[in-house]
Length: 402
Ligand code: SF4
Image (tube, rainbow, N blue to C red; front, side, top):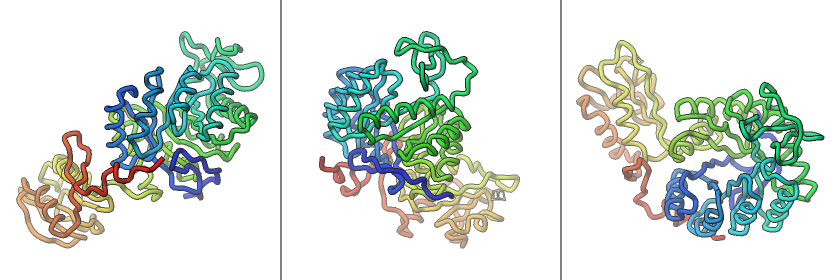
């Protein structure tokens, strides 16, 4: 692992983002923002899972107005995500957003960008300049063009010549991002976080590496439109893993098609796998199975995973396919099971405890963990999210005064 790339610190509400601080985890709510009750409820669930910054889409006036009400009910910083309308950006800032995310290239006029930057400066909140490969790729009805000087802009905004479809977008993303940075700096604004997301791993890595070498602003890492959880997790783990191992990146969002809580879990798994943050849920060590395995191990792993969903994070739990190699291969697990023929064995740190009927393995494992005081019980709710039985663990009890 390389040391963190030195950056300035930018504060999103109470959360500092930059190389002097832990890499923060964020996601985006997928509710209608103007539905304050639904959005707040989802953010509370995300807070409970360790989400540290949350973003909401601001599509219209009602959504911008809802920012104020949502912000009063949550404890983590609220970021307003705005496209195309500087008026909505101004409204979100006015409503009390802790930060905004814009792509200045789709705000049409430089004076609109200026208004937004000055409003953010007046309120003392940061702006993430988010340039995605998709936003500069030529699209039907929204052609992309190279401006007279540097960078590219949407045709119809400031004009220019079209960029051919086979153009390498990475240099253009970097060039354009730095143009925006200089534009913001000329207005005396430096509370900037940058993101340059592409939907493929190599372009994402190349874009972030290039911009990291050209400025000291904190970087928000992500792969845009990474896909459903399977491939999306792989792409995110690869791109973010490469960059983080090089010391690049200060806050991360894993983009997956699906519920946002999955993004938070995967983000923590990536950071924990690199030793950059602690795990937020137990680590399950399970074998790939082979000819020695005589039970349905994937089903058992799923059962154990569900049972431990809300158990405390530092636990390592092994679910192994046979007694021949299982306990030895998982000797450093806090507790585990190894399957036999119609039966199974409980073990702890590689030492055999007792034999258990195969159909009771998951149940007995959890019971044994309770007996060994390895669990601080919380109960899973029907959505698979955790509800703590301890009032001190509830998000509302840790709400930050604003
Ligand atoms: Fe095969 Fe046993 Fe190793 Fe699992 S633990 S892969 S069943 S030898």
